Length: 155
Image: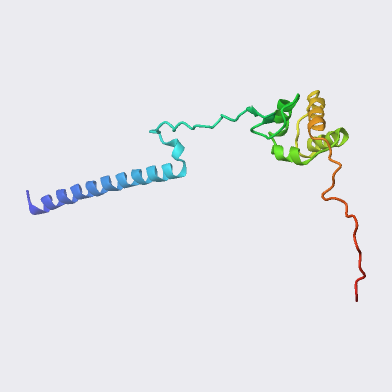
């Protein structure tokens, strides 16, 4: 063989090697992009770690109070928990003390504007619970002022 033939074979071998390196580089690049965009699509996924959820205070009652929500234990409690605290905090219930008419009006408003489902016969149980355990308070924000000595303002 001549030097020219040896050089051609060497060039062909180098060309094949460069092509192989390019193909491998493209495949690795595709794999990196693929796993970056959606790592969940990896075919060699590891099992997800188990998640531990603290359920110790789920429905415990302590001193007449439902520990998870702070609501008073009484007939209708779980109906309120299951229907009201799915959408908002129980603190909203605790701070809004109303009579039956106002609770029913509030429920109707939530159904019309906040996508609350039809409570059916449960509405009466819920309203009775709320009125019995969280009735309106007649006390205002502060005591009425008494024995005030007024003075004239000077201009």
